[in-house]
Amino acid sequence: MRRKNVLITGGAGFIGSHLCEKLLFCGYRVICMDNLLTGRLLNIKHFAKNKNFIFIKHNVCEHITLKQEINYILHFASPASPADYLNYPIQTLKVGSLGTHNALGLARQKKAVFLLASTSEVYGDPLVHPQPESYWGNVNPIGPRGVYDEAKRFAEAITLAYHRVHKIDTKIVRIFNTYGPRMRKNDGRAIPNFISQALSNKDITVFGRGSQTRSFCYIDDLTDGIVKLMLSGVNEPVNLGNPAEFTVLELAKKIIALTATKSKVVFKPLPQDDPKVRCPDITKARKILRWQPSVSLSEGLMKTITYFKES
Ligand code: UDP
Image (tube, rainbow, N blue to C red):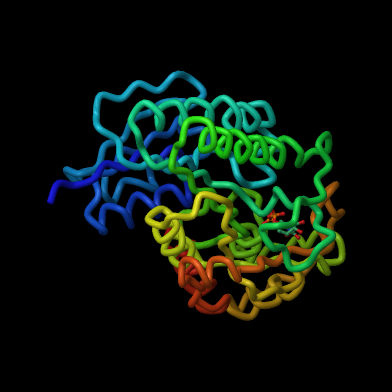
């Protein structure tokens, strides 16, 4: 059977590179597109020589022209760490709007299935807990996180408009906090920060009192769910994440224990609009995709700590 072609925008990023690897393994031909703003060639070097893999350096905010047949477009291009989207607010807004528009235009031209990487940030600082897909969210549009939250909310809106008007076969995954190898040590998120601080015996910087909660999904669980969604008939958003919920202080203590570090926790000011709670309701994914995560936080952290030690 002929290999199907998948375009992954943001393919050199943390999640994008794991998707490239998984889809190559599943027998697809992968076209990885990235402008390397926050993505890295280091993430894709393991399969760069695979004859079924192509890397194209391109900013998806510019028109995308591809000669190849494209069967699937997985649109993952965007800064995704709060520190990154604070550094690149305009690029974040542009990739979520103009970039998504271009990627959808390409999906229309190529008659490709289109999968949008959305986020739990569409729920903002949620007033409903845990968050089901039916919750509309509580987002401050003009706050520092608004550049990412609103870009992704716009991206969801235009994706479903293309589905309704142009009959594109769309999928939307709302990704909750995900971690694993290939995160940048300095990407600013809690897990890479805490692990690199612990491994160098520096203070572990907990923001606020550390009572805010997050639910952390290991990357391999997430990519399994994304491939299931890509092959499913579901056009509307689906949450993917691990519903095991921890406070940030619990996370810090777990990393201290797993690394046997001498580091101590220090408390720093809580960033503006930092969500107080976050936990996915994954009833829909369980039912429709028959998906649920299987990697525990301790197990996933150990694999991530090993990666950080070796890189
Ligand atoms: N956080 C922290 N210390 C850090 C980095 C993050 O306490 O050095 C907190 C952050 O305030 C948030 C949580 O950890 O409450 C998760 O932050 P992250 O940047 O990983 O992602 P978010 O879930 O906020 O998008």
